[in-house]
Image (cartoon, rainbow, N blue to C red; front, side, top):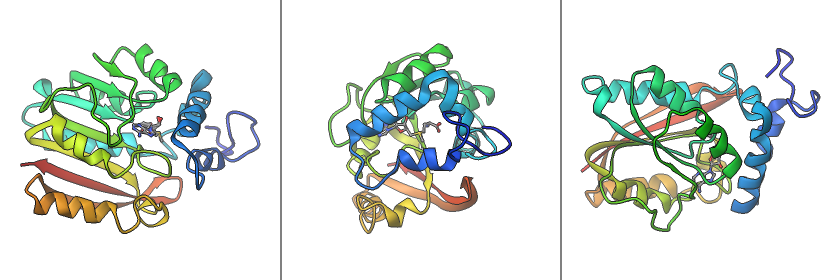
Length: 227
Ligand SMILES: C[S@@+](CC[C@H](N)C(=O)[O-])C[C@H]1O[C@@H](n2cnc3c(N)ncnc32)[C@H](O)[C@@H]1O
């Protein structure tokens, strides 16, 4: 990202417009991964979503570090929708050692792999389908920026719960607007979160809104403890 806030592709389109392209209304899952894989080339994604404009990874890492503050080195974490590994780097900076990544865009995952911070890397979608991961494998599943149009659907929550052990943390950091603007989530995502709590699957610990999470958009941070 340059100080003029322009895109790394063309030095003209605002980076926020490039970001919006990954979330355009009606984008399919295949188009999403193709878009991100292309964007990941030559570090372009990380230039555009630099810490000045995109705070998801640092916010998520702070939340996870606070939750596991007495036990950092033994915590098994799955970085869901890991992208190029920005969150993994932030977690490593906070002394977490056992990090895996799940990411469906091969180009993004390749960038993450090069950082040598993840043990297992899964090139998979989180959706309603069963992941190749055993029950209760993780102390923590964390999502930074993986929610959006054509991204992780509501049904993905069931798999997060299955693979996270009792007492573990699920942390979801996302753009607040998407709760209302994305058809998949509008009137559904928070309803499902509540139903899962009513069914005794997890307990909501917090729901916080943060300012200027990505460009000038607010973020929302959900934290759930697995029952
Ligand atoms: C804005 S990027 C966030 C990447 C990284 N977590 C970060 O904070 O930089 C969104 C990521 O979600 C991934 N994604 C989209 N749909 C997904 C799905 N169904 N399951 C898992 N990841 C998905 C995309 O491929 C992309 O890498």
